[in-house]
Image (tube, rainbow, N blue to C red; front, side, top):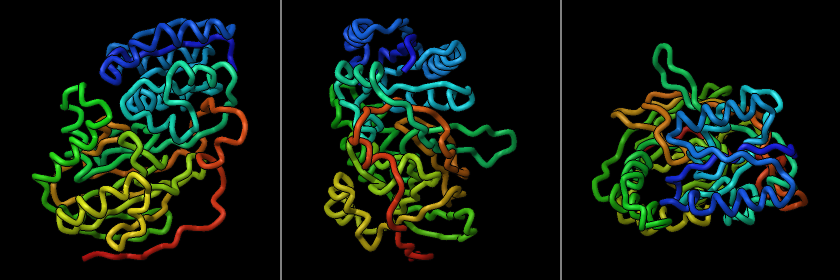
Length: 325
């Protein structure tokens, strides 16, 4: 734990939730003996600059926002030796905090900034397949297809919907959806797969969308991405069978859902899609996604609460092989 903390606040996160909590968070951190300087971000580019400058000054970077800005800060910190990230949930979903065992109440989560332990965490990275494109990191799940439409609609939805914004986005997207054909190449195996499906997701973490568990076995420290493919079924079956199961992670038991593990994967499609990660656009298909092993140090609660978030897998995931329709 560093005695000096840069508190980065996204005033717009969670419909103003982060802004409303910031004063109390700052007070609690100071009461715990930390030197705190608060910075309110104007946009993601400004947040990146703030995170970079704070890390270079040797300050712990505590981000009070949703996972999108947390991911942007992590993307900056991965290049700065000795940098430490602290997660303060201020958005609508706050999935990284859930996975790390951090309270979703930002004031209660402040205890982790003061008394947590720093451990290395993987990041995912997405790079567009065009000349000169630079990779961008994410902390949770990047996905394209049906998820692209649902994310776009959710981001445009009124803030008063709160956590229901993700369900709203999914239902609106489903009404207009028609299948897309995706091509994948997994590395290092070199296996090539093709599916007619709803979406392809690459998961560094196991959760997104305010508690959904698209990749329930994904780990934050294994140097791999869980690649989740949901093949095409009728809209009724998708609505009544697949979507409800995502909240428990049991959708991966369905015959039309496949999970692969890879250090890297190329993703393309027969029509254009924007890939979203942590709720924000991260690139246009075709893309290459890869895992960045131990890319950033993150503060986590001390004790045994993290065993489900971080640690070695005891058994390998069964590989369903190349399946398509």
